[in-house]
Image (cartoon, rainbow, N blue to C red):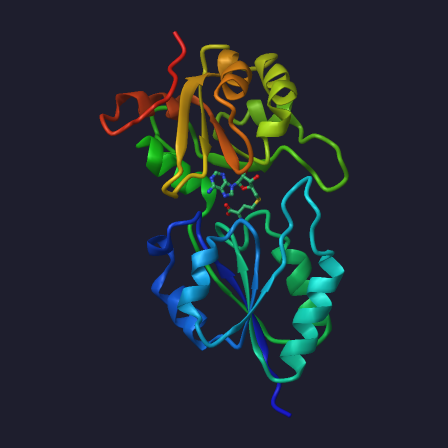
Amino acid sequence: MKLGKVTLLSAGPGALDLLTLRAARVLSEADVLLVDDLANPEIVTLAPQARVIAVGKRGGCRSTPQAFIERLMCRMARRGAHVVRVKGGDALMFGRAGEEMSALRRAGVPVDIVNGVSAAFAAAAGLGMSLTHRDHCAGVTFVTAHRQDGTAPNWTALAATGTTLAIYMGVQRVEGLCATLLAHLDAATPAAAVQWAGTAHERRLLTTLGCLAQDVRAGDFASPAILLVGGAVGEAALASSVDTIAIAA
Ligand code: SAH
C-alpha cells in the first residue's frame, strides 16, 4: 500500500483570507483534516472532500491527548492518507510541531510544513506597528508565559534584550509577568494586548507596562490574546488606523 503523508498546515490567526495560497491548495488535496480549536472552523469549507476530526488543545480545557493525535496521524498516513494537521497561527510557533515531527519521523511517515501568519504578526498589523521598529529595538522575541514544566521564562533576561516582547499564552498570568518585568523595565514602557487578532472579533488595548495587568482585567481580555511590550509598541498610538478600546493616561 502506498505510504501517505502528514502536512502540518498553518491556519493563520483566523480570517480565511490570511491563509496562504499553498495552504488552500493543500487543503483541497487533503484526505483527512485534524483541526486544532484555535483554527477558524470555516477552514473545512476549503477541504469539502476531507474527513474532519476535531482535536482541540486549548489551555485549561479538556483536550485530545497529544500521544493519541500522534498515533492517529501515523496510522492514517501509513494507510495511504494525506493527513493535514491544521494548527492556528503558524504551525511552528508554540504548536507542538516539534513533538509531532519527531513522532512522525520516528514512525517513518513523511511530514511537511505550510507556513502561516502567527498571532504576533496579526496583532502588530491590527495595531499598525512594526514589531522591529529600529528606532526602538534590536528585534522581537517570541516567548510563552507558560512553559511545559510549569516554570516561568527568565523575564529578567528577556527584559534586558532590548527587543519587543511578543508574549503568547500570557493573559492568565499577566499580573505575575508584569510585576517581574516592572522590576527591570520602566512603567511607562508601551504595552498592548490583542484578543482574537486577525479575526472579525479582534479587540485591542494600548497601554503601558505599569497599567497592562489592570487594563487587561478591566477590559476582560481572555484567551486567545497576545501581549506586546516594548518601545516599538508606542508607535501604534501614532497610527491613525488604531482602534484602541482603552488608552492609559
Ligand atoms: N501557533 C500559534 C500559537 C499557538 S499558542 C500562532 O502562531 O499564533 C496559543 C496562543 O497563541 C494563545 O494563548 C495566544 O496567546 C496566541 N494566539 C493564537 N491565536 C491568537 C489570536 N487570533 N489572537 C491573539 N492571540 C492569539
